[in-house]
Length: 116
Length: 113
Image 1 (cartoon, helix red, strand yellow):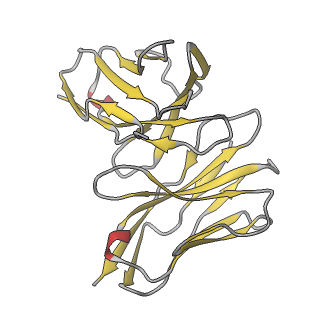
Image 2 (cartoon, rainbow over the protein chains, first blue to last red):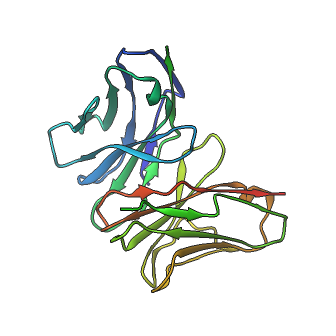
């Protein structure tokens, strides 16, 4: 079974600084998708970024970028120029492509605190 | 385009009662997923449905839980004879295809007294 591990229960960063959240996963599949979702205090799950495993280029969305290391099964999220609105729980998630497990497998999350 | 809708947002039930949670997917989406989030935990997959079909229910508890996605109307997650351990946030997500990104609703927080 696939597992997703987020080893940092909590991270703190100064406003306007850069922070990196770690995620590792375990799979025997070669084709899959990886995601970062954000859950602010409202509890709504918001998609931050998506990466297809077959793509070597790291995904970016404005201030958010990933460092995808397929051989190491690592998928870290970098947030540049941190803003107060970035404070939230961040969840890393994995999904197989093709047949097999249909749902997302989530890590336990990292609580990101932004210091003003 | 309206997002994924879930209702109610909060639901309180006494032990032994039934809970019915509703999910309307985003317009144009025919794939629905249900997840459960216990306190201080990530989301756990429960069931994946397409219109009138359960595709994967590998994450559903074997008893008391059921889900449907009828031809007309929202998807329903039904929990019979609720127990305190069912207290959690239940999230619905939808996508336009199997490999497409899942977009989440705001969740239903179930409290069992």
